[in-house]
Amino acid sequence: MADTKRPVAVVTGASSGIGAASARQLAAAGYHVVAAARRADRLSALAADLDGTAVTCDITDAEQVASLADTVAGLPGELRVLVNNAGGAYGLEPVESADLADWDTMWRVNVIGTQRVTAALLPQLVASHRGTIVMITSTAAYGVYEGGAGYTAAKHAEQAVAETLRLELAGRPVRVVEIAPGMVATEEFSLTRFHGDADRAAKVYEGVAEPLTADDVAECVRWSVELPQHVNIDRLVVRPLAQAGQHKVVKGK
Ligand code: 8X3
Picture 1 (spheres, rainbow, N blue to C red):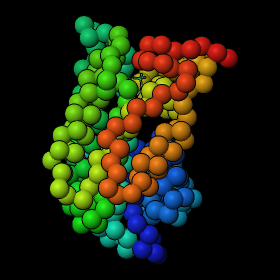
Picture 2: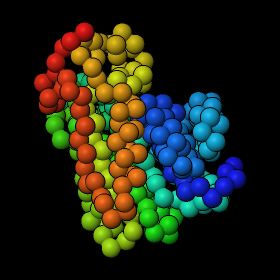
Picture 3: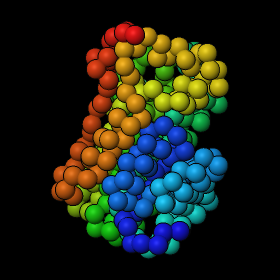
C-alpha cells in the first residue's frame, strides 16, 4: 500500500507488454502505479518493483472492477491517470468461418471491459481535476485485413468509444488520449491471438526490419500524460519505420 501521496495511475493489462512497460514509465515519472491484470504472480513482482499496488482484475468481471475502484479510492494519492490497455486479439479466421467464442471474448475485453473500467474510475478522475484516460487501441481501429475482422471490428468500436467519451467529457477536467500502435513485438500479443501456438506467433514478425517495442509505445503514453493538462492528444498513430501502412511492411534482418 502506498505510503506517500504520489498521484495514482491505473494500468490495465499490466502483467506484460505495453501495459507493463507503461506501468514502469509512469512509475518512473512519479506516479503510484496500480497494476491491474488477471495474472497475480506476474503483477505482484511488477508492483513490488515499482513500489506500487497490484490488483488482480479481470475487466470482464463487474465485481472485480468494482473492487479495483475501491482499492484505488483507498490510496492516499488522487487518481489522475487511467491507461485502458487490457485487450487483445483472439484468432485470425475469415468471417465465413470465424470462431464466435473468440469474437465474443474480443468484444467483451476490448469494448465492454474498457467501458466498465472507465465508468468505475471516472468519478475519481473527475474529482482529481486533472484526469487523463489513455486508450490503447491499434492501427486495426482504422484498417482491415483478411482474417482480422473480429479484432478490427472490436478496435474500430473501441476507438468510437474513445471519441464519444471525449465529446461527453467536454467541460469536465478529464482528457481522453487515444494511442493507436501498429506492429509492436510483444511477447504475448500473437501468442494470445494464436491460442498459444508459439511457431505461428513467431512468424508474425519474421523478417520485419524493426518492429516497435512495448517501451516505444509506453514512451508515447508517458509523453501524452505529462503534457500540460490543457493539451489533449486526441489520437497518436505510431508505427515502426518498417511499416509504412497497415500492409506495407519492410523486411530487413
Ligand atoms: C495490432 C496491430 O496490425 O496486428 O494491434 O492488427 S495488427
